Image (cartoon, rainbow, N blue to C red; front, side, top):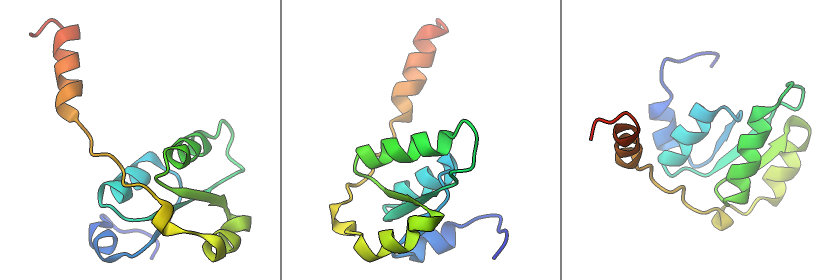
Length: 104
C-alpha cells in the first residue's frame, strides 16, 4: 500500500518489520517489540537516518542495510540476537523540564 493513516494494526500482527530509518517508524516498531530491519537511503545528504540506524544497531536493537544489501541481510539475519528496546521514561524528561523552567 502507498499510504495509510496508521500502521498500528499491521505492526501488531507483524513477525518482522522492514522500514526506512525514520525516527517515528523505528521507535513505533521497537516500542511494539517487533524485530526491525532498517533500510537506509544512502542517497540522502546529511544522512540522519544512517546515524539513527547505526546507533540502534550498536545498541543491539535493529539490523540495518541498504536496498542493495537487503537480500543478503535477510538471508544472514539472526533475529534472536536482537535486544528488546528499553521502554521510554517520559516522566524523567517532564521532571527535567519542570526543573529547567522553574516549575518545581
